[in-house]
Structure formats: C-alpha cells, structure tokens
Length: 313
Image (cartoon, rainbow, N blue to C red; front, top):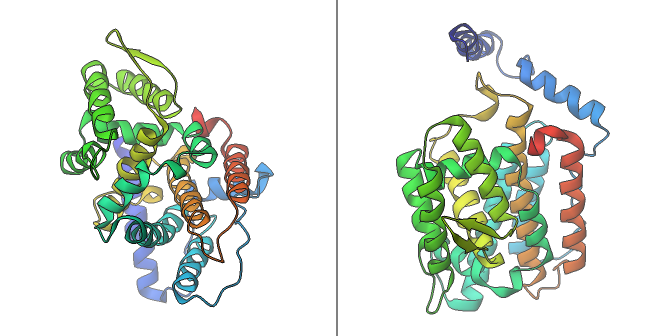
C-alpha cells in the first residue's frame, strides 16, 4: 500500500467524523470508495445476497429473544456483514450454551463449542457444505492465526481452544495436535507467497482432502474440521472484534471486494450452525435438517454468484 493512499484513507475517516460533528448523524454519511464499489457489485451481480430460512412461530421466550437477534443481523445486510456476524454470534453462543446444559451440564462457552464440535449429530451435510466452500480470505486469516502465530495473544488462544480436549475420550485433541505442527514446520513464515500456499493447503484440509505432509499421510475428520471452524475461526474472529483487537474491515486503506468475503462467510457459517443446532434441539420451533441443508447450500451459492473470483481467488 502506497503511503499516500494510506494517508488519504486515514484522513477520510477523520473527515467523516468531522462532518457529522457539524451536522449530527441523522444524514447518511458519504460512502467510502470500496463501499460504492461493493454496492455496485451487489446491484449488478444478480445475487439475492442472502435468503433467510423461514421460522416457525412459538411463544417460547428464549426462542423469541434469539429471533430478535437474528432480525438484528439481517438488518445489517448487505452493507455490513461483519455486524451481521456479531449479532448472529450471540445466537450461536446462547444456543451452544443451552445445547451443552442439556447434554453435559453447564460449561463456559469454550467448552460448549468444543463439546458441540465433537457431537456426531453435527457432522453431516450442513457442516460438509460449509467446510467445502471456505473463501480464500478466510483461509488466509485462519492460517495467520493458527500457523504463523499472528497476532501472538489471539493466535495462542486459538491454538489452545482447538487443541484442548473437551470431556473424556475426546479424540480430536490428538488429531489436531498432529496436524498443526506438520503444517507449521512447512509453512510457518512471513513470506507472502509461502503464506498463500499455506492458506491454500489449509483450505484443502478443511475440505477433507487427503494430504501428505512431511511424508505423513493425513486426512482431517469432519469433527476435527468442525472444531477448527467453531473454536479456531468463528470464536477467534468474535473475540478479536469484541475486544477491539481487529481493524474494522471496510475502513481499512487495503479494503477490497475480497475483504467482504471473510465477514460474509463468518455470518453464513454462524447462521447455518445456529439452525443446525436448533434442528437437533427437539423443540417445536426446530427447522428440519433438510431445510437447513438446503438453505445453507443456497446461501453459499448466492455468495459465490456475488463475489465470483473474489470468493476463492
């Protein structure tokens, strides 16, 4: 990034606040160039962007609270998929907590997600669809956190979450503990080209492809891949956003159309997993598994239509 462009973008952010300081915030601010580019892309692409799954009416108080948060998420679309992720994450966290209390007693959210990832009921077509279509930007993010070790504190926590055991006999700890060092030995570098190749390999691993690393054949099981998705990717992204450790993506001087793919995927994955957990919850408002799978595949297709080469390029 040229210093001049970075400086202009920094000035732009300050100028936006300065304009609002004179007029108040009732008027919509002028869009940044990347926001205009994205709006034009949405208008021309022929994609519906996102199609929510129809829900069943219920007087259940907890359920209606979660529905209100889902509406909050949908209100943020299409302009702010990162805000949509923030809202739907709250539903995922609440649902995982309820799920764990039903099945294994009360735990903190880390244990709730860890135990959920090992539950065989969640290792099916919905999870396979999500993991088969992770965008390149997301793999680069995850590679940096899990393999390169940046930023240090967030990376350390992410690796611990996916490598810990959750309950007696949890087999995923050993599987992931074997996988990470093999990838790290080959690709732990700050060189951009090597990092891109490492992210590509991580994408193949998340898809469930059979790999050979340092003469060691390895294929990650679906539960192990789900743990990386839940505890390594989604939870890490949530923490960094919640604690103000990550730059707001669309105000960055390096933002591009590709930048949108990452928060869009975080939202899609969280949304699908919420409904997958609900489908297995046994409540009157639970959607069918077939409906959740169909909706997940549909929305991944809508995203690919919108972003085209930017999704996996």
